[in-house]
Length: 141
Image (cartoon, rainbow, N blue to C red; front, side):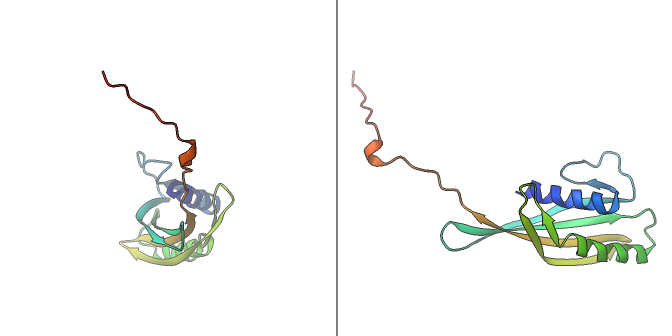
């Protein structure tokens, strides 16, 4: 599920900006600017009633500009990121929302921190009924 979220973020950034996106799908072998880097910061589960739980996926999206001294560009991109990445469509057409979003600029690099919460259900493996089990007897030598 984490790869689907990172992939959806990557596709959305590529669609909006057209910049190179590094992360789960593209390793940083030949780093080019302007570009984005998506990093998984944290993943946690919160138990709900029954077999349900929610999974929180925290991401850091960094934007590397051609001109790191242009803070106006960094803050403009931060506003667009918060707007465009609030809602994501996953490959199975599920719609998820970022519940915690914040941005900061460190050393000329924009850092956007987003946390997505996904409702999940634990899959139960069907156990055979006791009356349907076969008895296997071992023969002693």
